[in-house]
Picture 1 (cartoon, rainbow, N blue to C red):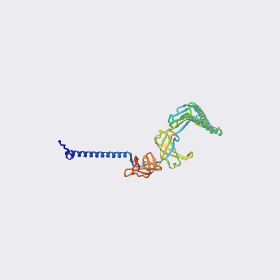
Picture 2 (tube, rainbow, N blue to C red):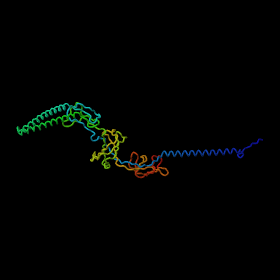
Picture 3 (cartoon, rainbow, N blue to C red):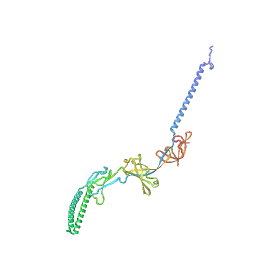
Picture 4 (cartoon, rainbow, N blue to C red):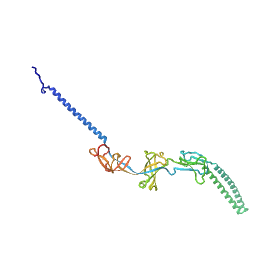
Amino acid sequence: MATMTVTTPSTMPRSYHVWRRAFLVFVVLTALAAVGWWWTIRVRSAAKSNSNQVQWITPKFRNIATDVNATGTVKLKTGAEVRVGAQLSGIVRRLNVTVGTQVRKGDVIAEIDGRPIMARIDQARAQLAQAEVALAKSQADNARTQKLFDAGIVPAQQFDDAKAALRASKAAVTAAQSGLAAAQVDLAYVEIRAPISGTVASISTQQGETVAASFATPTFVTIIQETALEVIAMVDEADIGNVRKGQRVSFTTETYPDHEFEGSVTRIAPTATILSGVVNYEVAVAINRDVSMLRPDMTANVNVQTAQHRALIVPAESVHRDGAQSFVYVRSLEGRPLKRIVSVAARGSDGIEVVRGLEQDERVELATGASPQ
């Protein structure tokens, strides 16, 4: 009869038990390493997520300006627009400019027909020559009468008549000289010259037309100095008390909304301009730079800097509204955002002024995806 031999665990080789325990230790260590790796990745991911969601900034003290806002218009300065006319009547013999022509002071704009003036000059010269001949005769007559009177040959009345005739001849020469000078002055008016340098803005008389300067000087052209500009701002009566001569001004125009021009207050009108019941005062602003970019009658949005003060500024993104209240999120000791009610004032290009409720050394949330605490 055959006999079967069964091997029990207690009878298994020793090497099998060692291998089994080593395998179990390996499995446990591998599991612990996997759990540790997973936890590390999760913590890092959470930290990175929180870092992306929350950005903290520190409020800054800055000098900010208190401005008075107004609407204005770019205008030509007084004397920057000149209407050039004719001093003489006559035919426009030549017109040398058109609209847009650049002229310099002294340039000949137009010319009146000078032949009538030349005829007057010739006539005045002839009259002067005639008066000088008469004066020479009167001087000779007076000298001869003087000798006869001294000799007792002619009476005193005849001597007095000779002296009177001499004075009349001298006056006639003076009058003839004045007439010649007047005609020569008129000859200078034949050429119409530019009184200022600038651009011809309009022309009201054409070549070949006849102008009459008897009662009013006719306008030939209008010349403007394009760079002689200023801004006239209409400031409300509630704000005019804070505006002073010399204050800094910044403004933009409808043509250049992204370009800031600079200037200063030069004068304030003593009387008001009332339009539709609104009381405004004209404030003139001298333009400091970039005048060549501007044109007359452009609309300007004006800010007059009336004062400066130090203010605690935070970015506009940090300030939130809840009804009538403003608030920010500040960083707690644990690093969480805490809601804080604040009082704000002016809003500027670089942020919002916080008047109360925040200290400079506190950290303020810029952007967050976390829930407020």
